[in-house]
Image (tube, rainbow, N blue to C red):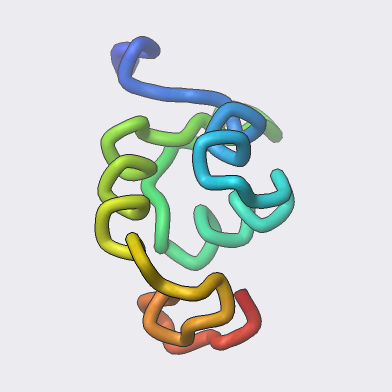
Length: 74
């Protein structure tokens, strides 16, 4: 079992990223954030959120570079 102190909920990740919780879930499904699915709920790796923030710093929220998969609908 993973150390749960390394994870945040999708709601906490959404607050950190200033995104809607559904967008965080999409980022998890697409592999742009790392996490673990426990039943029907996702836990998001804190380090993944911090890295995403660092990598996208200064980018407009619609910048296509934000998505690793080239999806410009972010």
